[in-house]
Length: 257
Length: 262
Image (cartoon, rainbow over all chains, first blue to last red; front, top):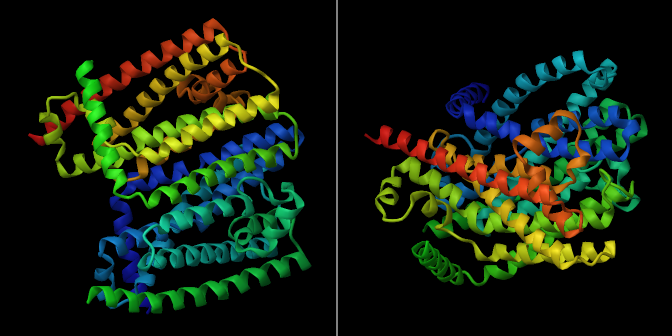
């Protein structure tokens, strides 16, 4: 399996290099929305500018590390029928998707981490104050968040076996996540009702939770509860993908004849 | 000019026929537009949950701005966005040759051939929000306000068209679908809020270099009675300048394209 993965990673890496410019464009595009939101919050609470700067820079970083695009890929592949090619290959298609995610996110990390370092030299508010333990938990939370978002996106993508407007379905989910994952506002700024929802739904664990660990906002019992909820959702999503996959395969063959 | 009017009407008819094939989608699209606007309103509500002014603009004024933004985005999604992937496709496959041989201007053709009608819902909803914002603000625009509003709105549409066209033209060099409109969206999103909210270099860039702020803020201010003749003329001048630049860029790209095609 490891050898297979190395081969997959290599192929995805080459593919990525072929679209260097597109990759770059795509990265810069995702940066503006958090920046705009940051300006709004700095305007509302000028005295907390520095913590907003750290928060929204962290949002950009974590958002890139956990972003998921598989729903659009799957939607297109299933609709156009090219998905069958993937099925013929000896490795389960989800591994191709995972390999692709690893390669791109590795690239994002390699580019963004030095940018952050340089930024931290010039802007003291960007310097993180994390203990080693916090840093480990932060990384664990980022990986967990990436897995959650990937599985959500992949399971939505699999719906393309039944529905033609999968992108729209995912769009709605994404908008909900905009509020509840901490992209529009740090979760503590939300009205209490929304905030409560955010703790039980999976979206917070995709972006906000790692940042809360980094800033020290979540610790002790809150931390343990957060990880428990995230792992719970993880189990739900894994089961969901497996079930959708099986059902989808039956449906797919029925159409293919 | 008359001929282009006729050609445009023909595009309009063809797209309408095409769209009526998919009538069942209308309802879903209608919901989607409402949903999108609801989300934008909720966002502003969350901001104003913590404050009563954003960059010096009150809640009602920001609503008017959001309405203008929504209207303009509706126009983009109606006339411009559907054409972007098609041009990329034409360039990639070389089918742009067929368009170049047609007896209409190629820039006109590639930017208006495909229209998506249900996006006009966003335009209507945008006007609704403008009305609601004015109601919240308790301001009744005078006839001069409304006139100026439509003048700068026209300038804004021209500006948007030029910026969009310049971006679209880069597809001669950058070929991968979706990536390009994504850039425009992220830039245009800055126009959702008052320009006075931004600071430093960002403020300078989106006011003077890529005039996102000009595009939405001036019409909103005009309708709120805060227009000045200088600002209106400046908006028109900038729009003309960008239109000219985009035209030149398209010409330049075409020379490049024929050069590559042989």
